[in-house]
Amino acid sequence: MPKTIASVSKNTRLTWLFISLLLLSIIMLASLCVGAKPLSIGILWNVFTGQEHGLAKTIIFEGRLPRTINGLFVGMALGTSGALIQAITRNPLADPGILGVNLGASLAIAIAIVFLGATQLTEFFGYAALGAFLASILVYFVGSIGGGKSDPLKLTLAGVAIGAVFGGISSGLTLFNPSAFDQMRFWAVGSLDIRSLSVPLFIAPIVLFGCVLAVAITPALNAFGLGDSLASALGSKPARTQLIGLITITLLCGAATAAAGPIGFVSLMMPHIARWMVGPDQRWIVPFCFILTPTLLLLADIIGRILIAGELRVSIVTAFIGAPILIYLVRRKGASGL
Image 1: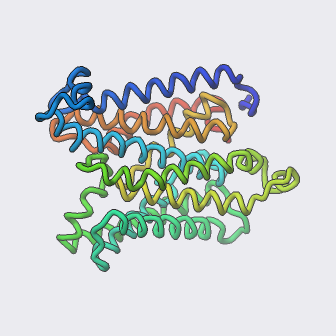
Image 2 (image 1 turned 135 degrees about the vertical axis):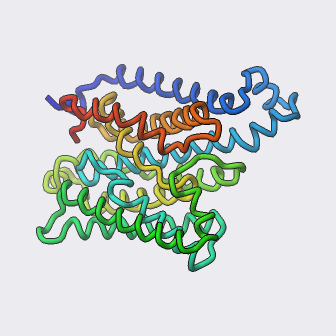
Image 3 (image 1 turned 120 degrees about the horizontal axis):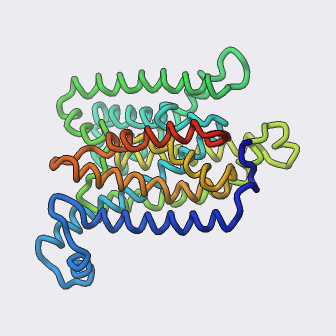
């Protein structure tokens, strides 16, 4: 039988919360220590207390710290947007990647670079948010054609098709423009590798605001999952919930894509893991996605540094890590139910 909202005890949820926070802390610490030049905890302590001023300080403040903080906020954005899309569409296979939202953001960035000369992160975010929003609207519209309300299968098929078109256009634009191709390589696969704290500090308030919005609508999302009619009878407003959710997804996908490129797989997988741990209550699923997704993203980034000296892109590693886990979870009875 699928889990009900009250089927998982509060003590169990708090235990998982403690374990998740502890694991995230360990992974963030490992992200600062592991790389082409490993650093010990002692050296790390000396760097942050001002006792170390050599190469180690440069490695931390111009490489690993920005990368780790970027992974934290990008992970929060991806996990939260994935949980919201699955709840709003009532589709356990939905995520910003499958529904074409991330690719819409990437296409907008490509157009901005090729035709508008965009070079700054603030510009990238604005165009990425606009692209994500328009992609969401287009997918929802196409998924609703020919039968009134959209259903999960239609939305998924529409998202995959539209995402493929967006990806093809982006590739065409950049391949025929060498300078744009050089700038777009960073986003082509998805990477956390940055050299300045300016990127995570820019997206941090956007991501935090989006996460607050997401938490604020979690009670309405629980009612929304019962169906529009019953949600309205319970005093919820499904149309308003969908609108706030769409705005939140736009902000989060725009920030994540501008900072790290189109990393899509984790948004699909992490809500399933959160749902397995704490049950189908969105008031717990969304906050758990804040914690679990950065953990997976940073773990994948660390593995990429270890496997290949030149560093394997994080989105490639997440696919290898996540696919077996997702297959296992969705095969469990009730694991993928919404």
